[in-house]
Image (tube, rainbow, N blue to C red):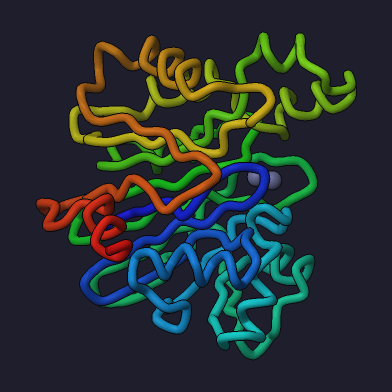
Length: 270
Ligand SMILES: [Zn+2]
Ligand SMILES: [Zn+2]
């Protein structure tokens, strides 16, 4: 299974999960043409995607879902509230409940786990492939014991590290917005992400990607160093940062890499 972020951040999120038998997107917060372009750099056409799983209805995660249903008949999986808020086409929409095991193909199962995020029924997704697991978690102000239980020991963890607490507090946002971002239903700070990872990383955790960094209130070096401070003693794997413009960083879970994404990108430019 490979996981490639096509881009993450407040201007759009989409992550590609690929196994031998399935191609799935997690979130579609881009325009149709942006999605086509970003997938095109991996030599994939939108019609090859089996399902798009939407975490919640905020525009940067689900804003491009209905558009691609209309343009390419893409099939979308979402919970009831998310589907309703996004006006998804009923004939191309599959509703899941939290903790339903969704069998996408013989080698890919997706499990949605609820996470706290204001004004939305947000979920994290755990993808299982031949006994190995990857977690994709974004837009949460806090976490539950249930989430810790499901993420613990995943081979790969993609999680937001949204803001540096000091930058947010000293930055230009009005007080009410600072309060909302840092609240229990907002986003995780670098510090909180570090503390969460300290609870879920085990020796089986091989790689971590930090996503959805605020362009105003964070910096990649701050996110990485803060998180590493918390997991230094337990985690020896690879850590990477996903920014707004992908695709970047393919993570190979449960198999040896055949070609790096940078090589694919390089070869398609020639
Ligand atoms: Zn959100
Ligand atoms: Zn978001």
